[in-house]
Amino acid sequence: MNPRLEKTRQKLLEEGLDAIFISQAENRRYLSGFAGTAGYLLISIQDAVLATDFRYTEQAAEQAPDFRIIRISGDMDGWVPALVLDSEIRKLGFEASDISFSVFKKLSGSIEKTGKGISLTPTEGIVDRLRAVKDTREIENIREAARLADAAFERCLSVIRPGITEKELAWEMEKFMRQAGGDAPPFELIVASGSNAAMPHHRPGSREISRGEPVIIDIGANINGYMSDLSRTVYLGQKDKTFDTLYNIVLEAQQAAIDNISAGRTAGDIDGYAREIISGAGHGEDFGHGLGHGVGLAAHEEPRIGPGSSTVLEDNMVFTVEPGIYINGWGGIRIEDLVLVEDGRAAVLSHSEK
Ligand code: ZN
Image (cartoon, rainbow, N blue to C red; front, side, top):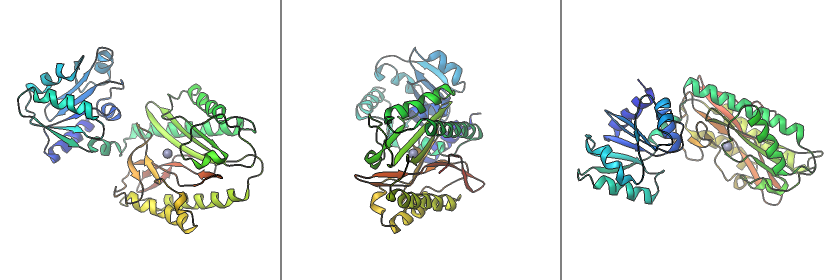
């Protein structure tokens, strides 16, 4: 018995659905084990179908033993009706946040063609919420990915020098991770130097790093499809006066959040501990993003750790704690660690020095 499939079916019963049509890539992989890049799942109480095209049917049969594999081609009209025609499905859920309007029109058109009066019902986050709580194997992969990001940061410290460009430094780290056995990183590694560091998601460019300015390094590693996320802020030579002041505020905010993580508390509460310190220091407006996000098959997933988030933290959730302060024209500071909720408390998976 596949526990992920069973939990999904439980959710279907709770929501009064007969089946769910899964289109979101990580959800497809999570539920089926199939790591290909195209395909859909149809999960009902009685059945589990993985529909994919000829490029993937063999791989799907190997990776998704709990699913009936159906080979599809062309428009949804060509295969969706056959999938639901002989079933008991009357109320079919779909992933509202994933499906585009044009795919929705095709899906509903082909469902209508069956003439069985099947109703399509939007759902939100059914599988995403299951994914937020990791199992032992997932945690092992994430730990490994966190170790790889730490090693890449060490590599960064050994090659960073005045005159190296952001792009060169990002590539040194990416190359290092690939050679160490990592898969393609989940996002373009961030090297944001000087005033570029005021942009939380700056793309590394040809700017040369110089002495005395903040450099934000943000590294995502990937081991067996599981991600990690790590940020540090460094400087070369003499830092300017602002650096220490802001760095200590951000560090204190991060520590307060980590110290207060406990199972049963809401994500919004934890965000509040960090935000209060940054606001108290007069920089509330300069911390414009959430405190963190879940990490797993995707680098950004549930739970979202932000103001007002009512998600209750549970054991075996993995997420980042990454307060930051960004000042236009000067640059920014971000410190990001990956944490696991373990025995009710936070276990920090990132070990790079701060
Ligand atoms: Zn992050």
